[in-house]
Length: 339
Image (cartoon, rainbow, N blue to C red; front, side, top):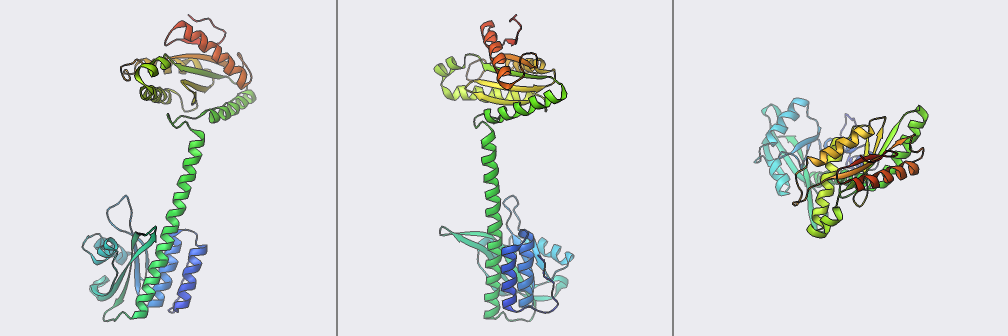
């Protein structure tokens, strides 16, 4: 939303333009530009909006009205000084009206620096500052002060609204991620695994390709939990998950299937190779809480050992049972005796 007027706007026009920017603006930058342009026109002033950035120590110039690119860059560099009145106003949340200063080109100015803040649960949340400047000499009237404060309040609401929208989006993303990942290990969860298996089986069926399923079981985890406690057991599960994530290919899917079992979907014919890489990676781990970490694996292939997800998992679990019987660190393919 843009506003371009050669004539000064009335206070009513400034308020209606700002309200429209808040209600129908296409984003924070557009809303800030519309609000500061409208009020700068009404006040007959130049203006600049500086916002706090939690990742940077200095205020960041977010919007200007009546300043060219060079003047805006020079102003931003000046405000980087913590002692600059604009920086002080933003930090101390204290408005200053009618201060003398020097503007672009060295001309004298009279400025009003108004903090941007909203109050929530009795606490002030500071967002930055808007600075209006008039060529000197100028006396900031009571009406101008009220308009400057109104502009600051509306700018603060625009920033707060953008922050809330960002927070909601982040929370939504977090919930979406939590719905598809195992909270302990960060790997895909069973729900995601089932969906990926369905998709990969459909692709392999269409293309006449191969697909392997590997089920991994952490050796003697129950005994480790009994002796060393579940915290050590959880550390082992996280280590196993890390090795799995590092050992697989980009096309593979790994998930925690429940308890001490993990599963791998490996498109193509390299399933056994990837499973061996995982088992070897476990063997190279340092002991966790004084306990060696190893896994057994059972591998089943599509379409040799099954054509559905249930058939492949049943075949892989049977192979895993044989691997457990063969001893820690064993791998058994479905239909092949443990060696």
